[in-house]
Length: 288
View 1 (cartoon, helix red, strand yellow):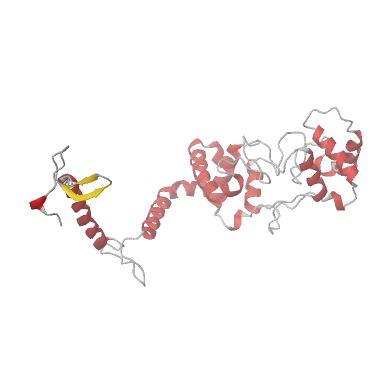
View 2: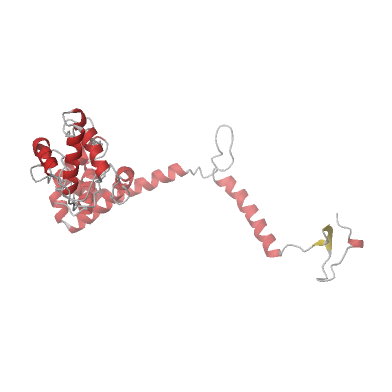
């Protein structure tokens, strides 16, 4: 309690003090601005109204529901229902149209890319990145280099059936582990030198590795090393590498093999979403 009869007045400001003092510093008894108090009182009244109208007070069996019965889940459910209703006419057009018809119709293609971009962010971005740029072990979809082919139909097949994911119609090819299938460490080193030279300037003699490549690797990668999308064999003459393209990475790949997995999204996504994803992914890397 402040003794108003014996108030101490601060000489510098002429304001009464509270009587509290620390190291010679006195606390002024300055009242709060009225506008600030009115705002505080208004928020208190508003909060009481909020507690009555909306879920607010936690209880052992769950929060109070409020008079309005509002919940974030029901609001999101309603928003999604409205979104599906808005999309329905264009989604129906996707269902009725072939991929080629979608791509040739500017309005439908624009919708498919927007719809596909949304679906990509939810389902594909965790592996391929938000913009399809990929990372080590996950293909870059913006580079116009397609492991299993880059036409609309090929991309659709890859998305629908996946790779090495249990779908009998999915892509099954993989890279053998040559370290346990007949190549010596010297041969692996030689062929790694040769493969490295295909996309990098080098003065090393790679003739030994070229012979190893011709004897063992051409059935998949081709005599020109430009790959085979029917087998998922990558083009080795570019500087785009799924698992890294330096000498150590190449030795690791040749020695132990590779065989990543791609989910079969046809079992999880509806046909319209698959088509939209196909058109969107096709647009990322220029397509074929």
